[in-house]
Length: 149
Image (cartoon, rainbow, N blue to C red; front, side, top):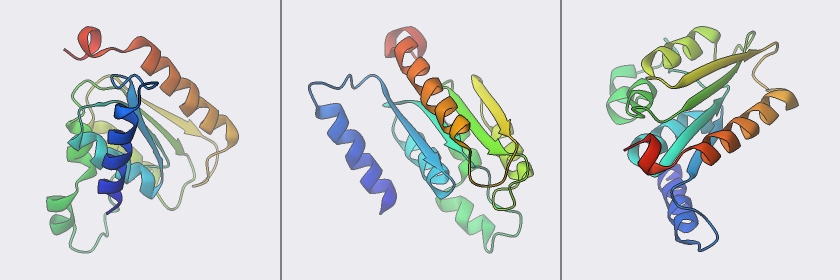
């Protein structure tokens, strides 16, 4: 349901006269980061993806093969194929552990950037500001013709 709602939100934004539909992006935190990867995989209108406290599935995920057959974050970031990815993760996160962040980051193609903040699962304001500034930079510089043709 959340994936469908995000797709409807992108449709709504793309239809607005005051929104440049060639400059849509998604950002997500924690489970929202997982959702953002799945949404971006399915929708090529998403030009950039920013994930805070996001990563691959935990190694102990029950029925992980089944889960990955439906929604695999590694497959999803691999499908970005040149769309920029920013990941901002906590060095001491016990919810989405650093090895999960590294696993997801390794599955993505360039351009990609992984930044670390000194903390746990909850990102500090500086990390949120970094995401906002990065997204603004990506959307100002990117156009479908010049960057993703």
